[in-house]
Amino acid sequence: MLEVVLINPTNGTPRSARAADALSAEDASVRLQAALAAGTNPDTGLLETLVERCAVEPDFFVRDMLSWALTRLPPEITLPRIRRELASGRPQARGQALHTLSKIGDRSAWAWITRGMLRDADDEVARTAWRVAVVLVAEDDKEDLAGELATQLGRGDREVRLSLSRTLVDLGDVTAPALEKAAADPDPVVATHARATELLRRDPETGFDAAVEEAKRVVALGPARAEAVAAGKDGAETAETRDTAAETRETAETGEAAGTIEDAGAIEAAETTEASETAETAVTAEC
Image (cartoon, rainbow, N blue to C red; front, side, top):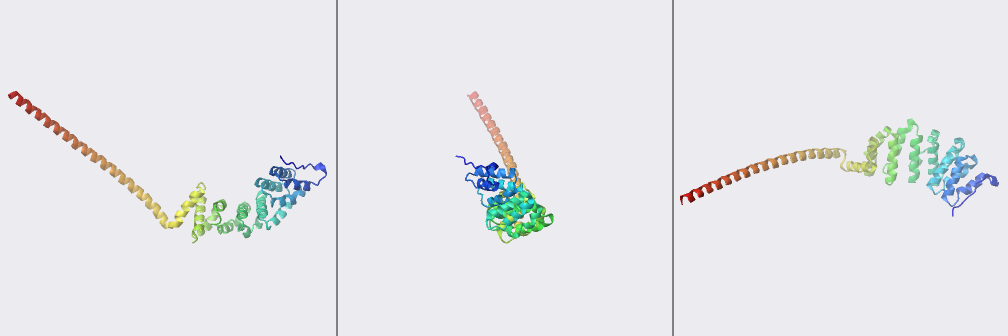
């Protein structure tokens, strides 16, 4: 049965209390509707309720709607409250605060994105911090940001590494020096991730997994040897093509010669048979 939580302002209950009840309802669809209502009719009195709910809301879509509702409030009151959440001991609170900052898009918040956030022990918080950093970073700080993000190369599972690669690619050409340095890292995991990211930066159409496999090959062989192997392979293919063509010509010539010999044998046999028949006819006539 669908749970219904009334949020009619005429029932005498303060709106913030009613919204808090609706946003904490058991049914996710009710919570989603409550967050939508809060954004549709912005009320600064709901700021605390919305921020607190972001820290504990289990449903992704509801959390996203909560962030949207916060973007509908005046940034001058929203931003200071969100900034406090960045230091929360709850990972979800930190992550959702960062996500909300990216939605608001106020570049003055760039100064709040610290090295600690970019290196957060929680992978999801760190991934969100990377995305927010790219949105808010000042032009003059992009190279420094690229260098800081490069320290996280090789971190986490495939999804974490993919997020970091996308972030570095989004930063543009300023990432090239940091990636080049990381590609020479003695840790093959770091070096592989750096080379794969550089491949993606040069050709965004390259799939991440394909880039990683190519990077693994280069790291395993070493750049110089990998190039030599690639060049040798091309040369071998060319030689093989030449050998195949030569074999084809030789086979054709051999077949042609065999055919000529066979034809000559047939003619000789025919002539012998004809001579025998002529001799036999002559003997018969004499008899």
